[in-house]
Every structure is written in C-alpha cells, then in structure tokens.
Length: 404
Ligand code: NAP
Ligand code: MG
Image (cartoon, rainbow, N blue to C red):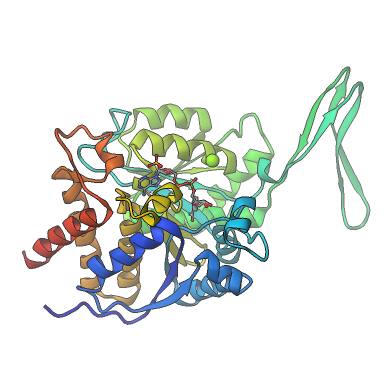
C-alpha cells in the first residue's frame, strides 16, 4: 500500500513522562506505517526547555502561527519539586500558558464517547464541548479584607485625570471586597473563536452569563457576542444549518442536564473552569477528553486534556507494566491530521484521521481497553491491555479498516 502523502508539515510538540512514551508508540505503530508523516519537530520535554531557556516553547508557538496546525504532547508544568528533580535553572512557565499567550486562543474541550462508557447523565447521547474564556475575571482579581466600618468605592481615573466613582458599599462592620476586570478585545477574540469553531464542527453554540444581575459586566459579554454574531456570522450559521443562542447560566445548566448533547457551551472563565470538570467527569474519564486551542485568526493546537501521567511513568521506569490510556493523545493526532488535510485539500489524509478514530473506538467497544476504562465500563468481562498492547490492538483494527 502506498503511504498517504502530506504537503505542509504539522508542528509536532513532544512532551514529558508517560505521554512521551505513548507519543513514540503512536507514531511508530499508528502513523509511520501509513503516512509519509511530515512534521516540524519541537521537543518541549522539560530537559530541552531548560537547555534552551524555554526558547523552544516560543519557537514552537511561532511555528504553530506559521503553519496553522500543531499537535502537542502533555508537558510538565514545573513546580518546586520538578526544579530539584530536573535540576532546572528556573521554574519555567507552563508551556500551555506560553502558547496560549502567543496564539491568543480559546480552549475547547470535548469528551470522546464510546459504547460501554456511559455518561452519568442518561439523556446525553452526543458529546458536549466546553469553550472556556481564558482571560481575566476572578483569575486576575484584586481582593481586600475589610477590617471594619468604612466606605468602599470603584474609582476609574481616565488618562486626562477625570475620575468616575461608584459606591460599592458602606461597611458597618468587617467584610470582604473584590475588584476584577475584562477587556473588549479579549471578549471579542473569545467570541470569534467560538463562532469559528461552531462553524468548523457544525455544532450549535450556546453562551451563558448572568447578565440579569451583572447588568454592565456580564451584559457586555452578551452584547459583544451578539454584535459579532449579527455582523459576521449570522449568514454563515444559517448556511451551515446551526444556531447561536444566549441564555442565563442557570437556565443553561438546567437545559444541559436535559439535553442530548452535541453542542458547544461557551462559558466565562470561572464558569468554564467549573463546568468543564463537571462535563468531563460526567462523561467518564479525563483520559477520554480532547482539547484544542483555536486562535481567532484560525490556528489550531490539538492535545489531550490530561497531564503526563507521572505515576505510571515511574512504574514504567522501574520496568513494571503500565496500562495507560492513549486515546486522547491519539485523537490529538487525528484531529491535527484531519485539520491539516482540510487546509491542504488532502481527502485521503482526512479519511485516514477518521479511520484512526474509528479503529480506536472499535477496539474499546470490542471490549479491549486500558485499566482506567475497564474499571468504569458497562461491557461485560473487558480485556485489560497494557499500554503497548492497546496501541497494537488499534493498529490491527486500523489495518482491517484500511484494507476494507
Ligand atoms: P495527570 O497526568 O492528568 O494524571 C492524574 C491521574 O489521572 C493519573 O495518575 C491517573 O490516575 C489518571 N490519568 C490521567 N491520564 C490518564 C491516562 N491517559 N491513562 C490512565 N490514567 C490517566 O495529572 P498529574 O499527575 O496531576 O500531573 C502530571 C504532570 O502533568 C504534572 O507535571 C502537570 O504539570 C502536567 N500536566 C500537563 C498538562 C498538559 O500538558 N496539558 C495538563 C495537566 C497536567 P491513576 O494514577 O489513579 O492511574
Ligand atoms: Mg479547574
């Protein structure tokens, strides 16, 4: 069989620990045999980041901007323990944070659904994707403990010195106080990323805030979404047969619980933080969550939502058997290959991405899975495979799909 050809390289960002081991196996068993894989390789493993003073992360993000599509392995975000473990020059920043800052994107997280791993919410038949705004609000707040009686005000001083004041509260006793902000530019790019992703995946878009209570702050989010939708996306949505709708966050929660799924739910920063954990655990497993960073100018970075699975890596280093789930990492590759295929007009590359996902799902649905899934599956007598056996089982399914 001739290998599938590529025109433009994918930006490949390698990572750390157990996911780095899976990364290599996925390439060797599921990609190299079938694709003439073209990538521009960046090693974001912690050793290389340390050696290059983290320049490699910046270079990788710039390459993502140049070529449009990247696939990223999970990476260690250093803490004090990692500084000692890897003898680091500095406690380097989170690579995901660095990449997000350069691409200015929104993160979309969606569960991979398979028969035998049932969502806890009975009505959910299709995945629910969370789009989380990743700037401002309570994550960049200023807080005060108020010791006793006194007056708290909001004060905005314009560049020309004019002040605008608003009373927050006349304290009669002790209490707390918090100030937070957001920016039109950031909300606009959040909105555009959401509309573009909805069109790209042909799913309805929901957006929710608490604008009835927060008449200026949350209302601004609502207004910006509506203006951008009316001005730039209404026609495109109609053509694609999808809808945009805005509702209050509490109404959204009630509707989500009764829905069948199959839509994107855009959330403000804090709501997205909370709701994405609810959605991923209700759908089954972190190892079955994909994540894609979409920038407003149309660059994509695909990855798994989970980390480097450190505990499994230490077992692997001791020569013990591991049963680490590679599904989200495989789907990061298939997502990136499909997008590359779409951008370059390569139908067979897109088709390969579809088959790779089908092969992965079929393997699990046939009862062969890693330990994390075996613990939660409703299938009778699942066969628990180790990390490599699971990937090899997918390879056999893939070969039979490709030969069909
Ligand atoms: P983690 O790697 O997500 O793993 C936490 C636990 O979840 C694992 O110990 C394992 O449970 C289970 N798990 C997660 N993914 C799994 C998989 N694919 N297959 C089977 N089980 C899986 O989180 P962590 O251990 O807290 O973090 C490890 C490192 O990852 C940290 O250095 C952190 O900075 C980094 N991290 C990176 C990213 C990223 O690059 N996007 C995201 C999050 C964390 P059991 O041990 O019970 O089997
Ligand atoms: Mg959280």
